[in-house]
Image (cartoon, rainbow, N blue to C red; front, top):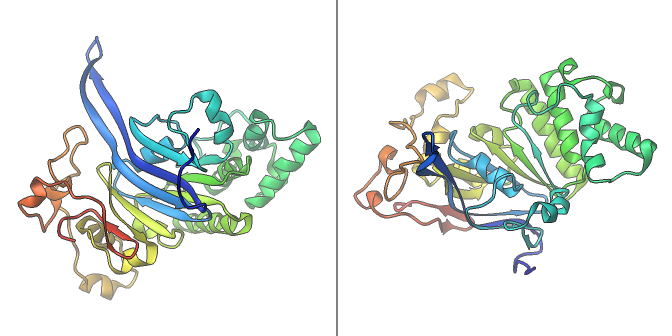
Length: 331
């Protein structure tokens, strides 16, 4: 298998990635159209980096995460992971690759089997991939994982409904760490938790990344304020495409794309006087259907700065400053 000619620190590269889903209706399941969930995305993630992936519901960010881990097969393009193109591998070939990547789900309750104990849930990857020898080593590893995420090993025999929401998410994180992965897809891991618990889980993820060394995250969220303190870089998605990509600090200080500016304007400021005085960029209309996306720039029906060219020309993601990429004709 050919190897990707890239930086040795690069753990993941998406090249012109597209994921399309056919829409079928009727008794004969005739194809009525195609949903372009992801439409030509280029991204990279380095070892030890956290890439925030942000956008409205339905923009394709979760589809990217599930395609990286090959729950979905790409329609076109490639997914390079640790120097190998995994986009065309079959299930047998994917098995050793999947040991090196994990997924933390959005719903900590729905992602855990209610009939199994927490210990069995966390230890499942160890058994599936034959990573331990004997019952003693298995028990020691499960206890180690519980301590790693801040859970008391005495809780191993409890079932999921006996834990709080935050504790259930810690169980999910422990399960994701079981195979010692180099990349974890965090699919809105704190959206189902209250604010105080969100902070605890994000701090835990940061501590794990610092302690384990080399662990990379793709942190998927719909709220820019959530990813601000955990992401090294942030990619903003709209209707299946990346519209802005830059360092986290730069994005919040100098957003270039009108969509990013509107998302940041929607984030409330704790100071009521500042919040009342600042201008709000209000987007009109709803996000268009991916079944029938607009021509040209897909954001133009909602953009306050739209020109005639925006309605016909598809903007490329181009570098407008050092490491700052924007998909906008006016940037």
